[in-house]
Length: 313
Image (tube, rainbow, N blue to C red; front, side):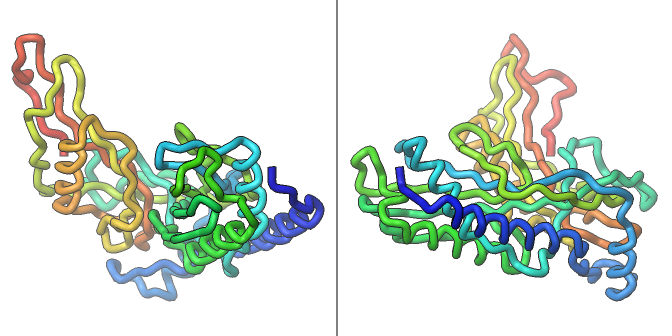
């Protein structure tokens, strides 16, 4: 286990977390309104005044080795502690993306008066470090953009600073290289193989958001019919941010699950053909994180699709 000066580390963490909480309290960043007829200045005031209440939230840091190797438990603990202590959040803390829905084929906006849902801001940034046998950092890159000004650079600076700790990232299983992912997120669920630690607790505002939806007339996905399975649905679920112009931001794309490589590839191709109406707060466009499924109905026991089978998306 790497020996660290606990008091010093805790002080650094507290300083960063206090700064983070105070920045969140200052409110949301101004929203781009290029897709609306409302002036930028008006939308700034509309969004800022739209807070209904607050919800308990936090910022979490996760770590996972993704090349098939393993990390020692004590090593993971030190990685989280030292990286978290080195992280200094950007000021102001500009939250620019809202949480959003899991989309379904029937969830299409048919009028401008769709019901608003209370949503809070969300934040996720993912970074990949490649290290040598002695723990020397070879590369650090962003693999999932946070969309917060200054956040990705602050996260990578913290990872690089932790990498300066002698032997901290060194593979303990004798492999010459290791690939380690770091994830900063308001989501505490890391998934299989992740070790997650809370960095800060805070309160995020909730605002009435008319969710982003697929626009009518978006073409059907050309999904490989050979991927159908008897009695089982075939599905790929993608998660990404729909920006204020209604376009998916590919730098935020994550594959949540997929039944085969071929089906995932087809879903990624189909995503580029979809058109979205952006999320809005009282008419002002905002960016929103959505989950988007592509699926085929299962084959019947006779080996043929049901009569009412449809290609979803």
